[in-house]
Image (cartoon, rainbow, N blue to C red; front, top):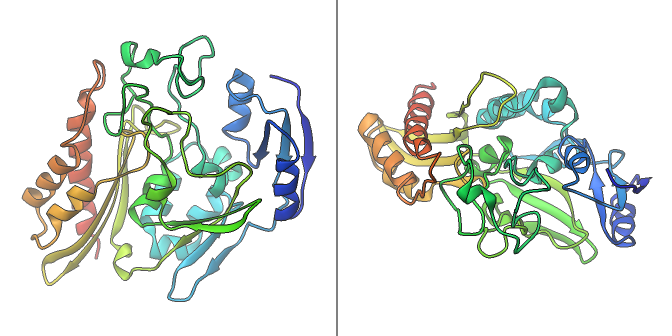
Length: 329
């Protein structure tokens, strides 16, 4: 690990000023991802700005029944909040399926949004990785790529996004609030927060230099209570997804009026399956409709030599998740 300076701050303006006053600086909260990457030599910040004391650790109610989740809310607190469990069960389930209890007690909402990939080659400083060192190449494409993405990939990068929480947030259209040197701004949906890999896989989101995530807003929809998160992985706990699905169904009069489907473990970002959602609108709940939606969700998938199994696995994950959601009273 490289040497670095450290400061703890107590308000948002101080955090932004401190970050902007030092080249090569980084915010640190729970540190469950950043500190790992620093130990591996992947991240080498020269100055750490500790934001744990910022007053951003509340879950507040919004007009209309929605929730504002402060960026410093710990994953455990968010998962077990009664309002989240009742109104947004898909989010609670996603959080509880991630990491371990100890890590969830430290990890924050804002930090989870900025989680880095667990690609073997990204985490190996001796390997070529366009995400870590733009223009160096991608050893994953011709290497062992069982855990890698089949959606959203490019000829520069095939790394998967690792978060469970963010897949659920994608399904329920979370809004992200940020503050930086130029003031406050709102990123309307999480789908607008992440960017395609394209020619620069190192650029993962739309945050500008020095910007700090301050909150995530969830808008209430009564039918989000009929939602669930299904995660398929190599072992039952403390493992990243090979495939996951966050789904919500609006069923009225025996017909699907609206659906939300987001996928994890198979894409370069939390993957909203818009085409799959469209196929469900107006259909009767059932295996035929769910299978058609799954086919639409994976229609553009591009497998690598070791991960073609993910396509069928993800289809089955979607079908099972929709069946589970439809059965919720």
